[in-house]
Image (cartoon, rainbow, N blue to C red):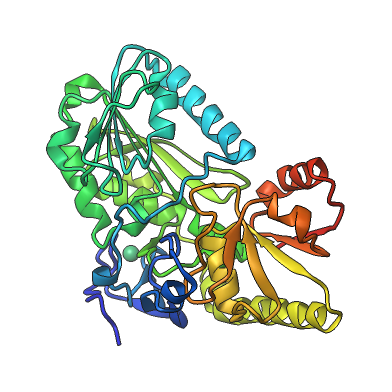
Length: 390
Ligand SMILES: [Zn+2]
């Protein structure tokens, strides 16, 4: 059953939508903490039904069910405990500050989470306001400098007077992403020369390099360079720069609201063969991993997954590995996740120290970008097991 009414492409309005991939019965919110095994078994389920636009290449989950997705206090997805991720966030903030001379400016972040990135931007003497419905009503936490975090969704008026607006890994969660961009464009005073910075998962990485483990129900959209540029163009922004980052897993744009738009410079949509071959390549990859897990189980090897974010949760769900079926624990360095359980598959989330008393034979790292830091952490606790990236 299609839950969301997709009247056309969410970016360009194109009517030619083709099926890409269907995955039934997945958790509706992969980063929602489950307090018990029973709660994890009962976690809300939904479907993924990806379709793509023949005009701009945008991908949409036509089965997205907004009623089963709530970003409340149980939503936990910070990556700030990872040294590799922190290094990326710090380098991104420094690049933005230097490029746009952000000192003593007014910064707004849409979907700021706990404010880790906003704080990096404000360390340069900026004043920041962050909006996120998963946070408590309002706080100016000690040690956060001039950062205020407001626990509600961003409203267009919140960007009035801002010199810089950033929004990372939010746009792909919205049922109407272009509405946010249009409202933002209207609320920005062009005379200030304000810059907006948006970062999303790179849909081209999903298609080309089979980054399949973070195909999740709550991602309504998968932006490619062509569809992201068109979304900004349609809202009246000029994209100044766009690039892939974090081993091409992320796609970001920096844009101005100055109306100097050159539609001829919009990137072309990815080749059709990437879409038409995707379902078969996806199935091959899932089968390959299912066979590997079965083989390791037959050898009685103790397997642990490292990373209880979207990728770890979907890896276990796509392979249908429940607890007791070969993988019983998932390691995560985020202490707020530890002691909780993986939705539907029910694995307990533990800290790295747990491995001291339960040494594994094999660790599956869910993101290759974290492989070297995971190896260092395992070395630190004296575990020299095999390590494989999924
Ligand atoms: Zn389109």
